[in-house]
Every structure is written in structure tokens, then in C-alpha cells.
Length: 65
Image 1 (cartoon, rainbow, N blue to C red):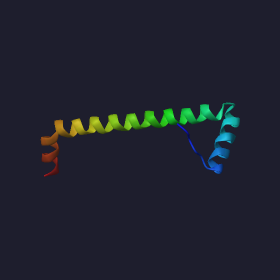
Image 2 (cartoon, rainbow, N blue to C red):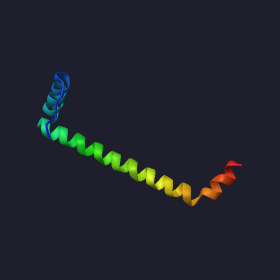
Image 3 (cartoon, rainbow, N blue to C red):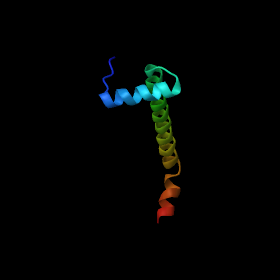
């Protein structure tokens, strides 16, 4: 995989890496891991909400009347 960044993105990443004392690759990998973790949490939240809506479908319908 090749990741192509704009000049401004590359410079921002370089500055962030220097500030944190890490490599640009470490910072980028951490950002990807963080993103994937948040998306997995969002998926789980959606799944739980859907199950709850099905489980309490009758009650929710009655509350809406």
C-alpha cells in the first residue's frame, strides 16, 4: 500500500511526529488504529440499538401512541 499525502498533510504529519518524538509512520498507524477502533465501536452501538429496538418494539409503539 502506498499512502499519498498532500504537501500540507505531509508537513502537518512531520510536525506532529516531531512534537511527539515518534516517526511519521508511528503517528499514521496510531491514527488508523484509532479510526478503526472508533468505527468498530460505532458498529457495535448500532447493532445493540437495533437489537433493543426489536426487543422493545411493542413497548416503543405503545409509547408513541
